[in-house]
Length: 371
Image (tube, rainbow, N blue to C red):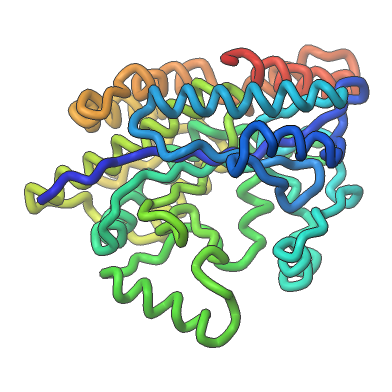
């Protein structure tokens, strides 16, 4: 069986904040034009005018992804500063009010606003998507079923949205709570094969409910534009190196599942009901309370789960030249995710307004740390 390329592509959504008020600011036309001139098709506006989206090129390995992602982040930061703005890579601004935001006036977003009504107005959230090149459609369908098991682990490591409209939600990823209000979200259905997936998509397309599969927003989906599996469950990471660690884990987990397939083996398929319980635990606790190991029948501390995952994919990380990035997941699990760091920043402030400013200041600093 020919080995896929396992190429990488990373998409990130950022929020723009005013450097004086540290509140959200709409992207000026000049900022988007400057970014587009330098980055060509790798940057675009997002649904809300305070957002901007970037996407790397198709990267052969994690080193190429680092080089391109650093260039993209640095370029957006450079041009934003010229307008007294700064990007932050967090899935929610800690204090912003979604009711004050305006959506971008483009046909695509106007259609979304019409189709999804009041629900889409609350989409003041940002995510990170990782594409891994597989090429073969039946392979994409087969690995999607098995990869679903690991989605809660990836969410837990990425959590960066504990605050919403100035309140601590008690969640590690409040973004997931907001996003799940949209249709066609959540864990992907467990299709037996590619034909079953195509028939299901075609049923909605033929009815005119959706134009194509790009309007399906599952946590993991076959990309409609590229021969990839696209993992969408993750919060966006303030620190670039953490984003790269998550990308490497995606890449290696899929190669591990492919390697099992070559040996006529597979990862056990669990019901979405069970995986959904781990998804909730990741959403609620991040890495602090552990996830369920269904094989053991026990809740296992997250650092222990990461040690087991790294052992599982060590061979694949070696082949794909990303062992350092994979092992960095240990540090995230032990030291804490962005949600924990944001809460720590807020706790050190004297009053509520100072706490929210401290969180945003930390997020700005972390965005620039690895550039």
